[in-house]
Length: 205
Image 1 (tube, one colour):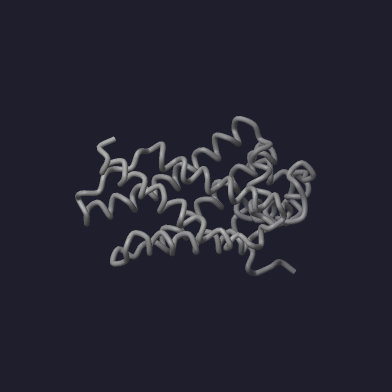
Image 2 (cartoon, helix red, strand yellow):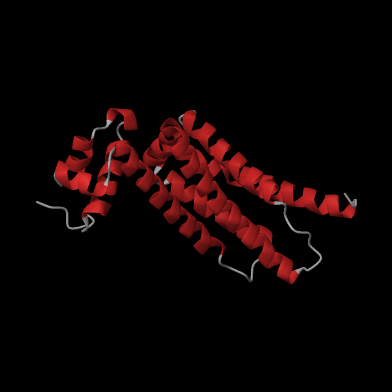
């Protein structure tokens, strides 16, 4: 009997099917037959939407990242709070969302690295989106405090890339179910970078 909660359109069902398969196997161990079976569609239907499993994986990676980014945006959409309170809320929501789907996140974070240049491009695009959100958050604070200096784009990218590496280390160490432990570290990394920007301005450098 079909699952009434399953996605209705074939593309969404295929992405959900791949997600289910990834919770048990590496991408290298999964075949298009497995994805189609998990999605309860034909193999022909799979190829109507994706050229191969790698393309399906990249679509899943992008859509999952977009959903997590939206969760983060919703969490920090509290302009009445201080910048650090918003950052703290964002870090908690972001890590909680990832921890809540730990088996899938482990595969997405690790298997994207096996897709070569295309995988790295997708990862870089996602990192840039999160960096843009942090920059926008900081710019909102600058509207309240015009004396704050702008953030250098390289610094913001470094913060996000560093946080992603911490998460990857945690996942590779078999601690994907404990990602929330990084919440305080994440907040301190961002705070430290902001303080460094302020100190540099105060020193005239």
